[in-house]
Amino acid sequence: MIKHLVMSALMLMSSWAVASSCTSAIVDRRVARDGYAMLWKHRDTGNENNFVARVNAKTADDFDYVALFNAGDSLLAEAWAGVNSAGFAIMNTASYNLVPDTASFRDREGVVMTDALRSCRTLSDFEMLLDSLPKPLGVQANFGVLDASGEGAYYETHDGGYVKYSLSEAASGVLYRTNYSYSGDSVSGFGYIRECNARYLLEPYRYKGAIAPETFTEVLSRSFYHSLLGCDMEESGQEWIVDQDFIPRNSSSASVVIEQRGDGCAVMWTVIGYPPCSYVLPVTVYSVPSELRPDDVTGRSSLCDEVVRRKNEVFPIKRGSGNRYINLSRLRYYNDSCRAVSMARYENFRRSVSAER
Image (cartoon, rainbow, N blue to C red; front, side):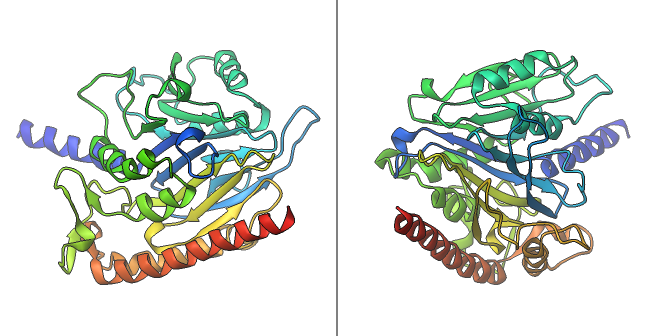
């Protein structure tokens, strides 16, 4: 009886962690196709709907910024990935193997990132912010940070402090994080298979120095490659596959790549909603496409609403554990058609930028 209770508790803990999971990377300009450093977050969360909004500076010392928010966050209090007018960008992944979280003060990651977007220009500024905030911080996270100079780092952060891993010290030119921290213990945490998936899929591009934003949004965030099984399950020929340890999952709600373009204008390439059923739109501090902004009535992104509808066709079984099963024919249809739309969006944006120059 006790064994069954323990197993049930572990399953519940695992389900919660899965809903709070993300896959991410920071890319140095030396392995980027166009010479621009990048920060990527494939977001997994229990909040199916999110939107993008611009937040104006409240004081002369603050920065304007754009960020991804949960639907219903009318106060824009918790940013989950964003970039400000100084070119400072930040995102996070939840970590489950850091110092045990025993404080009643928790789940403050979105608030910390909002403070950082409002006030930080450089990595040093972010470190000063973390050092100055009252302890416990109320976070268990890997914060990925990139500034306008292309300097990047992960800050594996717990209630009492952080450990920094600099992009400049990464021999491969890429840093990865999922839902465990390198400075934490080596037996707990989540996302080990997803990190292997990401490394495998990105390596051909990294090796050639050809990583671009679409490498993430149109390859990694749409791929059903499983590193432990050693195959791409989208190509399995089956009618159904089980949603387990892929980069895109039922809980995926966005894929965001922040690209430091070196011309004073960072671009936040945003695929809102379940990425295989969505397409990319370029966001800057000065321009947020209407499809991504919150509706005045619903408080949700109109595109995200449509993507959720499509996702329900990919996961059509609602009873029991049916939400773990993917209908491959619907998945392929949306994945392929949305990828084509994304590639056209990338081309149109770059053509318009070239024309302005």
